[in-house]
Image (cartoon, rainbow, N blue to C red; front, side, top):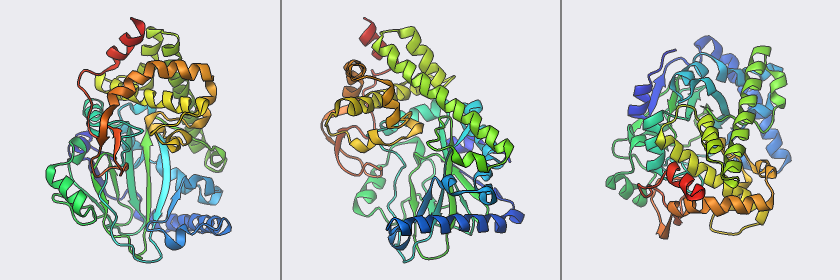
Length: 395
């Protein structure tokens, strides 16, 4: 299946027909319904009411639920119509991997529309314009998918919004009522088995979470894989398992490169630092390097939180969870460093953090950070980059 990178960069999404072949639909529906039953049983046993009360009950990381009979729910992410498309779109094709596997379900009672948003946390990622400049320079590091098992008209998007900040009109509507159609927004009408692949910076909307049967596969491909659990790999086919194992090795390599970059700062070894960040995203231009630098500063702070029990306006949950697409490898990564390492790291990376913060509270609507904060939502000073950072600790 052919896809067009220029279409993705221009519109922010591509609609693909028959991602799942019609002859495979019914079998895949049954396998996913088995996973839904297993997840509901877990929720019931743990006294969690997600299925009964959630606006969009979601099976997150559903690979942990599979067995040999339901392995096709994982293997569908490795087909030519999914993984092959991702190879054509991601910034480092040789590093393309499956990064997340979820299933979105209809609620038990009507919840109506969600709020328009971009899938971005400026607090623990980077300001929007910085991410957009990287995207347009280097292409995406991560792409998301919706692939419905039944006809689906829930998803809307504003074409081209991934390339720019919110307009005045968009901000006004987001502040007044973010749960109605947006000027310029279009419905993405998908038949069962079709797919939409999109950039997560895109302004998008869940238009109606109703009781109409919905089983929509959701997830992504990335150049930064990370598998917190690998038990599922024993249930898939030999070819599928070999591919996941190679991605797991790639994940370990990138975690080691992240450690190398951070230790290079501690040791004031600029050559080793440049080698590490170029290895994390081969071929990246300056704007991509700036994003990686910001992500490394967040990693340094996560380590400090775990080693020094530091309190601040930076939330603890960001340090306690993994987010591989921003090279946050999870709390276990902090175990590679001592408390002294953490203090030295932050002594150098705190200057990066200062570039990302304002002296007054900031806010912009339409992001996953929905409260004012001192970190910039949209952009930073233009005289900021990797060269300036390296010079700050090598001079």
